[in-house]
Image (tube, rainbow over all chains, first blue to last red; front, side):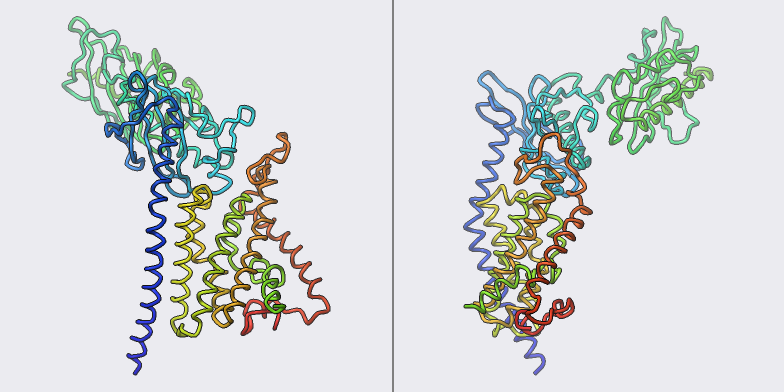
Length: 345
Length: 222
């Protein structure tokens, strides 16, 4: 009897569920077309917004995201009356309250043509202001948060609160959108072949940090650092007329919350000949990629103390990354001096 | 007719779901940062509440007591999804700004609470009026909260700049602590009004009798 009761209840529940599902199926069928059309229209409107002068858009699959968390949903070449105007990418990546979807346009002249927020699930009234057409980061010029990216050069730092104005009380949203825009900028500039757009692709040639040498070869004995956490990736030796004049090394170490990679060249008398900050994956670390930061090391003695705040100025907004990079440069230079003294390179 | 009107008015002040029964507070805090969101959420909840109460009251004799909760949930979830889809199709802007809150109507305690306490035991017409009254009661509170929060926290109303540009928005009001403060002040005002409305009519129902809800779920008859 009890079992029959349970089966009966189960059947009743099933009937309610089926009726509910059938009802939903009808509504879904009647609305799904409209919803898909709306989304397509949104996308087209967004593309037009970032490339108002384009005559059409051709899908392309050449633009690749370098980050696993930042996904390029679709990429389009914007066709102008006389050739390509640039690339527009629909991109989504994590933000405060869920994924944020943007359309970012990159022009062939190396600037961002525009940014449109398609979807943002961040806090209403705070992060959601990113998508609001009436929220101005600059009330005087009526610039919205995504609006400020229009015309921005890809070589800029893309650092929130420095060259990007943050949304009040929504720094996380501001940062995540800025990161998305920068990621698209980098990827698109590679496809478009715009040189110098991203400092991380700057020359990794050891020659650049060994200006006094006429030939540079790979060292037969790699330099090693006694500093824990510093790994020296490549060691090269610079010679002039057969005599060793200096050595360079590419080294990598942990920095603030990412890794930093540097290229350091040291002469036989222990002077730093050149430094390049090749890569910095710190969340706020991009300012140290500026050549001005690396330039400070040139001419300094490797055995002198190198310290941020005393003889090295921190790249503004990236003090921790500056410290990490400085420590790495010092450790690499020390290792090179040791290797040069030890001989056998 | 007078009885039905009583059921409707009940939800506005005397048994306001937010200020008196105190259910569904989480969503009310979250969406009231702008008036537009408050109105949207209020309308969405009113629709779901009205339809769910109507359907459940209609089938109240066909719902076995022991499985009433899952059936209520199915009905509520179905109507929420319907509304979500309709909004995406025909009110995309509103649907975007409401974001995650629409699916959350399913678990809004007001819907479950009213369905369980009222419409599963009351005739269809009463249930519809109750759903409408409770929905409006919820909506006006959301709008009242949002007006204060948007005006002081952002200097705008419905997205239009109201305060002079020299006014520095007080972000505090947009953030949750400000929400609680505004909520408490409105609740004090509303409860004062309620006390006056009920004065001399009958012994005031205590908080307890409100929250446990007597058989018919209506303080009017309690």
